[in-house]
Length: 328
Image 1: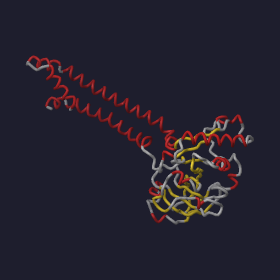
Image 2: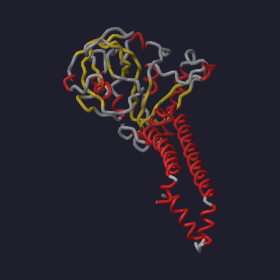
Image 3: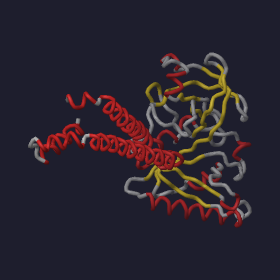
């Protein structure tokens, strides 16, 4: 220790260099674990699927679905228990303090069951909230409830007024969603506010080309992802063939199915792994710098080591001394 204390500036530099390398790795790995490796909050999340329609001929990687397409796609499926739908809609929310514009999602009554989510307060939307005569209902995301409403349990039962391109609608707050990754992540409230015949107005769902709805599915017990993908692709091919006036051959409409966890992480995967690799490279550089510092000090101690050897110190004892200093 006395030997180390005589060159304390060197060892302080070594400690700081290693701390920076280890700290960067720990921070990046924490992010990678939280985003890529940690399971979702959704019940049986390995059975949760994201269904995507695309039209490469139009340059569209995700064209979403229209209500007629969803109705045709969902009939008598064997590998999927049910489909849930989500349509991103921005609302002007009136009734919870200052009126504000809120990014929201309009869902059908199967959505929360398919997604495998639970409420922390009140209830979630069900099939009883579907239909032209259903009352408007709203579920708040946990983040919005905590950050904007300070976790007020008295929010249940409050009447709010929602305005959007589909027209104004009154709705009642019926529940708060458990902490989870909402889809999309910008969503603050999830509503079922305009119902006819599905969960959007009749004028918006009349044609197959009004595609603004995302589709999720839950694997049936015992079914595999490949089986579900094959069944849905076959069903979609039949729909395309039956409506050739809508699905032009040059547009190459097709469908794909992937696990929800992969869909959520799709955009983050590459960036996070690149950051992780960069952090590993930084740690390697830190270790190399430390090795160079130790080596430089050892070279400067040649005369000291020669004197020790002349006084009878063995090569093994000198190596043990240098190793002990390096380990400290």
